[in-house]
Image (cartoon, rainbow, N blue to C red; front, side, top):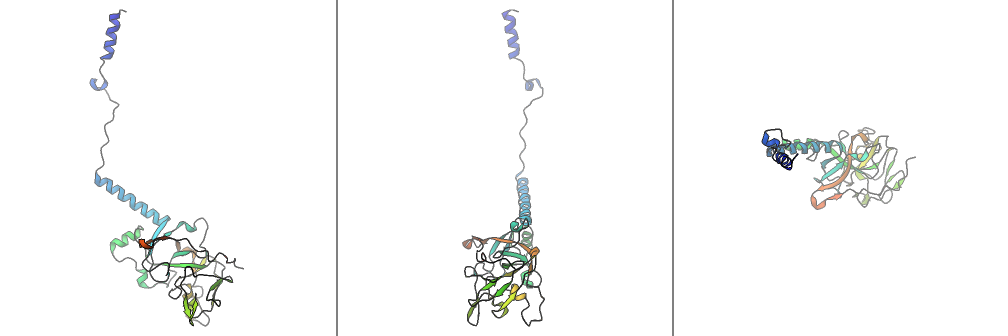
Amino acid sequence: MTIEDADTGATARLQAPSPRESGGPSNHKGARPHIPVWQETLILLVIAVLLAVALKAFFVQAFYIPSESMEPGLVKNDRILVQKVSYWGGGGPQRGDVVVFKDPGGWLGPEDVAGPKNAAAKGLEKIGLYPSGGHLVKRVIGVAGDTITCCDDQGRISVNGQPIDEKGYARPGEIDQNDCYGPMTGDCSWTAGPVPAGHVFVMGDNRDHSADSTVHMCTEGQTDCVPGHEFVGDDLIVGKVLALVWPLSRWSGNDGTDAFAQVPDPQ
């Protein structure tokens, strides 16, 4: 083969038409068309709603404080977040926990059970974006087996014989001009328990203004009451208060309390 033949072959190779020029198939893919803005907005909205529903069902839910019963820490109309995972895996409420629970029956008035009144708020409540009503917020004082006694000469309640110093979070009532941390029965001398298995005994931190377990128990000589109605079933507890989120000026996490750390196990 002559040099001329070689040059001719090289030229042929260099001048060979590309697949695009020859009309053959191309490996280059066209740009993907953009999704319209309204479709993107709709997709994001659906995802946000699904996430809100999942969060409400499994993790956290918003509630509001319906009364003054948890003052001074939680004030009426405060907004709180409750974590539902607190008691997963076999764990249960602990003494000192601030919990949200469903009405055991007759603890709330009609106005407290009603919840949001307009359609938009009701819809947002269903997906967890608006605080729910029809629930109570109280502090766990006694768990299964505990006996709660009111009160010693300093007005303190005792759990299993151990006096509890609640000055750090509770507001005492007054009986005979003396501080009492269990005055809702009308006196400062009562005993509750032992708490049945699967139940808790709860009290509001505002001890002179809280329709809690003490209001629903049968005191000595009382006949118009239902024995055991003072205890709240663990299955009614939605979760443990995680944080106060509104108003922002009072935002805070819930660090719990160590006031019950020295309480012995029930005998």
